[in-house]
Figure: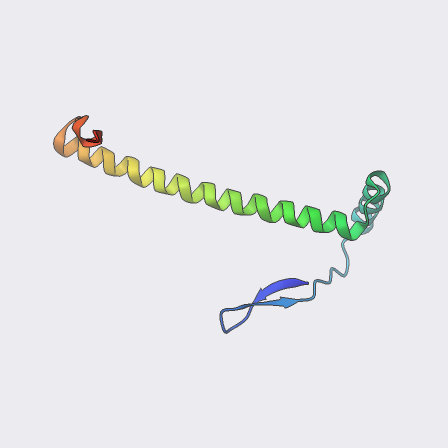
Length: 92
């Protein structure tokens, strides 16, 4: 099952049906299945999970970088107005 966003805003499960993935991909999956001793379905699930995890990590990294760039811009504006000061970062 695959998830799709329903008009209500909830994620609804839907069937995943890949009609034609090509002979090369099918052969590669069959070979991987034989070499690892896992079913094709298990291999595909693992690869999908790994892809989703990587995609999430890339989005989180991009969000972190955007936030860091914004913080650097804020710091640059502060330095322009006030000059350098360590007092801003001291904790008592």
